[in-house]
Amino acid sequence: MNTEQKQSSENQQSAPLGIIVFIIALVILGGAYYMVFIDNPTSRPQPEIVDLKDEKLQIEPQISEPEDIDTAPETQPQAPEMVAEPEPAEPASEVILPELDNSDELTVSLIREATMAPELLDVLIPSDIIRRTVVFADNFARGDLTIREAPVYPPQGKFQASQINDQEFVISPENFSRYVDYLDLLASFEPAQLTAVYQQLSPLFEEAFQELGFPERTFNDVATDVIDRILAVEYPEVSPVLTQPDMVYKFQSEDLESLPDADKLLLRIGKENLLQLQSVAHQIQKQLD
Image (cartoon, rainbow, N blue to C red; front, side, top):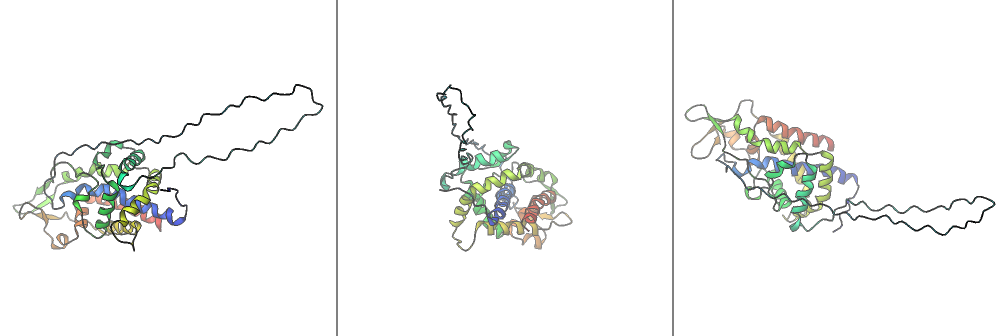
């Protein structure tokens, strides 16, 4: 598969869209497993992070033997011959993309190289990463959640709610700290490096999206919808009240409880985390204007 990137302005603008979907999916999916506010598992398996090092061809310098030189004196100095400079070699950093089914090692390796905190990548499920992210992004853009397709593990520990009376609760501030690793991961990426990562992997993201059967749309269309949804969510001025009619916490407000699952997930991560997420999405949107 040819991975040469086109340098058109359209592709330059589309890269940040896919980047924000990829990273936001990793961050907000931390709570998607248990959107209904039930207890989360206290432990998760530690994925093996595979480093895929590019083996670059080491070209040994060729040292030619000096030619025999006529030692006879010359009456006039001879002008040096013009030696044609060799053609520049193709960049050694070009990555040949694997098949989508075999893309996990390369994806993890590129993400690892782009982050300043690789130890935070233990939240990533290193299995079918691109497909998981694309499926989640497509559903999230429409307000839905796909629990089984999550590309990251859920946050550790239990959902924390503070009881304010016999029947009412609020989300405990301690619960928001469960998302710190995901937000720290979001902040650990160097934008320029992340852009390069997405540009290399974008054909695989598009291939995975086309498997869903929407030929009239592209993955970048989905990305735009994801950004719009994130920016449209408004956190209530007063902490939302929860009820627990059974084992599941629900928003007491019918307006909040009737929101799409994706919007309720954004409320669940807390006001400060939501604002941080929206700040990133807004910065990307400004770059595209």
